[in-house]
Image 1 (tube, rainbow, N blue to C red):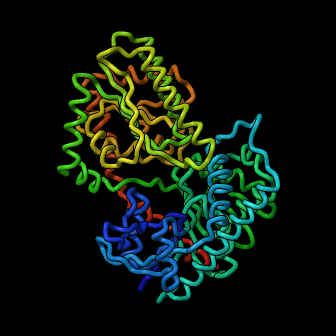
Image 2 (image 1 turned 180 degrees about the vertical axis):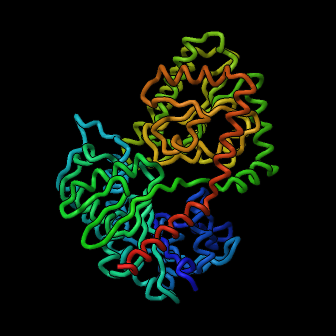
Image 3 (image 1 turned 60 degrees about the vertical axis):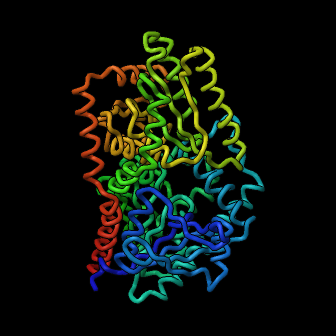
Length: 491
């Protein structure tokens, strides 16, 4: 067995499947969607590794209590070895809502209104201790899985929920090969200084326990390198994207994730998706379709998207009645008050556009608020313009899914602050997500583009997405770890 064939042990907050009871009350696994799950499952199945995740549903927790939470389920390409961690509800809430989503998500997406928030207090410290404890438990469980593996594994730790795991795991298994991948943006050093210094240093040192740190975009990698320069005892080599500390080297690498294009096209071709497209065609009528598909999430910039559409209609009255804006929004994190308030703002913004410009026969904006992945796939096939305008985004897979499923040479209007812009920007119409006027102009430009230019851009987007399959993303990380192993051996 070569090193590249070493077992892979994956850790993420959410697992590749969730268990829910069927109509007879039997717990059945339901697989998650997206490029991350596809890529990591593929790596795990090829190497006989394991996936460690927190129990999310009642079904997960019941499974977790059986035989230490370990199970093997059959996947399309082979078995999936899964272990759930059953975390106490209060501990999980403080770790997840108090720190991961209530603090780290906000700092890395620049979401705080710094005149009023954040306010760090005694509750912050309690939540931070929960985050430390959960990360410690993940590291201990990873070390246990390493002990059970038939050969020394490599560890792929995922995202901002588990920033401390690399350091804790390094303490437990000093010789381990560890990669951590951040799927969000990473705040630059100035904004990172909002965090209490002890928390900021712990997060950076926690990540620096890895051999390889991965990011979707050069901008996020550079932000991390600049932040790491402020950590005592750390030497940062910016040109080589390397960090040295404690006699170890940490490689900082950029590997943009992609999507499973074949799976999306298969789903788009199903009778169910075709029926949904027919319904959408009847609803759209003769109008052109402006589409957005998003979680109802602060970072997605939904309100400014509606404001931009209203500005476009104000400045271009000839388009009134000739275009409809369909917003497919999935509820997200409604247990956080900021998210509940933002959901109300989004609906109110759409309603203002409809009151101002709508007529008895034409409603400019339709918002559909529900989880409906198949509906999104169907809508992708029909858009003339796809609006993806997040304030900041680690990557953004909608910007890739849409062009792969679209059948009308639709135009992508894309935020320059999305990680996907670095890869797709040459064939998209870029916008500053804070500039409502520019976004309105780009919507108009996209709707009016001549057919030959639409076709050129659509084909270019498809080629770029297809040239970067999900397996390349995870394969690049494994190659990085192999290079780290060789550097160690050469010393």
